[in-house]
Amino acid sequence: MITFIVLILLIILMIIFRLTICNHMVSLNIMKSPIEESDTFNGIPSYYNAWDSNNKTIINLNRLITLNHNLILEEVLNIYKSYDTSDEKIDHILLKYMGKLLNTSEKIPTLRNIISLFPDITLVKISFFYPGSILPEFSADNKNTKKYHYGLLIPNNDIGFKIKGYNVNWIEREGFIWDDKLVHSTWNNTLKPRIVIFADYLHK
Image (cartoon, rainbow, N blue to C red; front, side):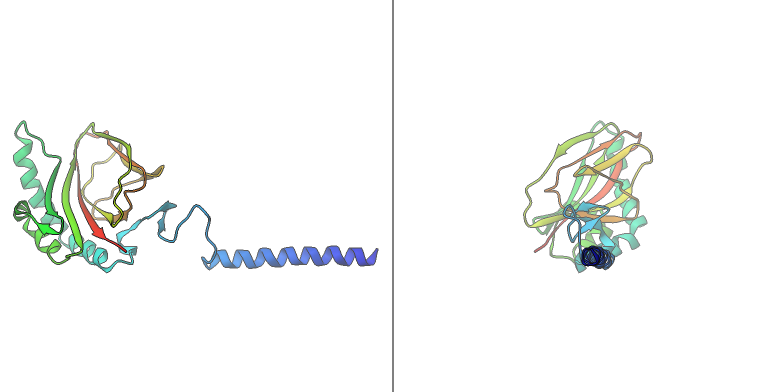
């Protein structure tokens, strides 16, 4: 009987010890949930704040764009207003494509000067997303690039971006990176356009 009680106590002590070790490993971020990845932000795989990137190009790009936010926005709005007064609407301004700066980038010289510093940025464009616009769920097949988004002008209220079922909010003066191979969708139910800098960058 005493032997049985001792055995039970030993089993209980072993369970407590294992739980303590597991909790300690979790606190040190050694163990991860199966649904998470090493590059995870807010539970979304392959999505994280640009400042937290391990890619120096993205960190420096984000820093320079943030420092020159007002000037870039002013140059972009000058172009936008010229179209806004006509029947023609533009959904984007392509500045760099397949690693080459385009002539259109001369209209936004501040951003052109910044992106000319980064040869591994393969594509840059200004995206205009108008009131009432909705893009249903889809995914891309870009194996060698990831996406950088930076909020230039973000209206309030019902505007959103969903990645793999998680809601992501664009924030003015902030950038994030993500993998567009994940299913994503977006909508703008406000009365103003959303203006965001898009960039593709090479990753290993």
